[in-house]
Length: 102
Image 1 (tube, rainbow, N blue to C red):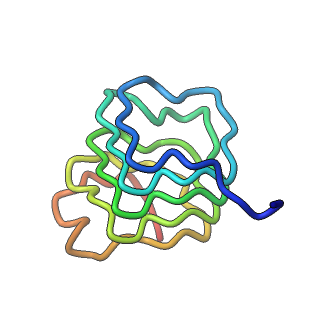
Image 2 (cartoon, rainbow, N blue to C red):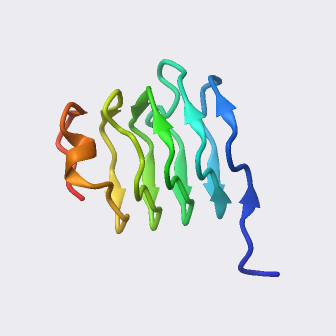
Image 3 (cartoon, one colour):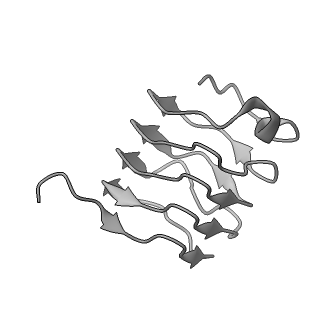
C-alpha cells in the first residue's frame, strides 16, 4: 500500500550513499561499514534504522527516521537529524558528534 516501506532489512553495505534522496526504506538490522558512506549530499526521510550498526559517518540529512536500539559507537555524526527517534544515550557513549542535536 501507500504506507509500506522498501524492505532492505539486514543488508550489509559498504558503498557510498551520496547524492540520493531516500524515502520510506526499512534498513532495520543492517550494517553500514563504508568510509564516508553517508556524506553530506543525501537525504533520508521516514526511514527505519532500528537495531542497525553504523561504522561510518552520518553527515546526510535524516528527517522523521528511527535509530532506536542502533549501534552508533563507531560512527561520526554530523546530521542534521530532524524529528528522529534517537538511540539510547549509552549507545552514543563513544560516538564522535559534530554539533548534533536529537
